[in-house]
Image 1 (tube, rainbow, N blue to C red):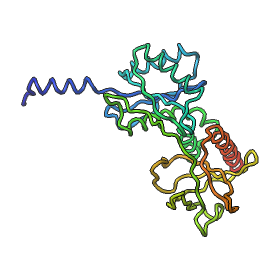
Image 2 (cartoon, one colour):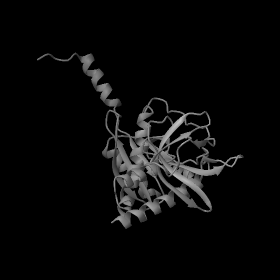
Image 3 (cartoon, rainbow, N blue to C red):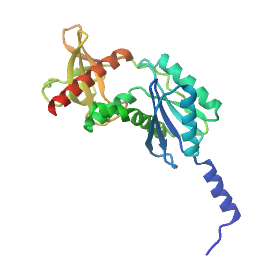
Image 4 (cartoon, rainbow, N blue to C red):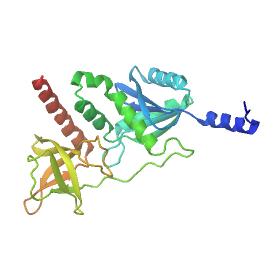
Length: 271
């Protein structure tokens, strides 16, 4: 049996020393979802949901999980408004991250806009009942956060710069010959005339405005396959319907919550 050279063995040990899993966190007021990467940094798996008991207790549990998975690396979801600005919840996440760093962990942030929306929609599509969804959604959201971090390159020597670009309003028009209620699949035209195909999930009236909930029916550059898209139905100067993207995160969340309520009621009626 051929023996390894000392140099080769040393190189192998050096590589192993730099291999670390990464914890992914979805930090909320009531629950903290936790996920972990594989050693190759390719995939994320859900670990558990921490039901918050105060910052010190929660930090202690995250540190315990870090020791369990032999890592000091954490990718934490940072909530931003759709405009790109940080709000109150982002400040709470940063404060929690500071406590983790005081306990020897290294934290990097991941833009988590629409992450919970994606997780919720996946659970709905999977037929998970509403009461059961609450038990797993945070863990699933943490998995989305960590997977997004891994897909962006994972843990590199220098942290990737956060994208500070703000989301500008996008206006879509319905392709001629289609109606939003006609088919499950509709084709919209963006401002550049590019065709975008969506699955129509629901049209709803909310707070005296009309909205459509869509899902991408094909691969799109800026939209994940499992994300839901909320557009407001407005009218242009010629009186034609246009579909406007939302830049107000609060409006988007309120509309999507209403969509989930209706979807849940329909689900219960079918049962």
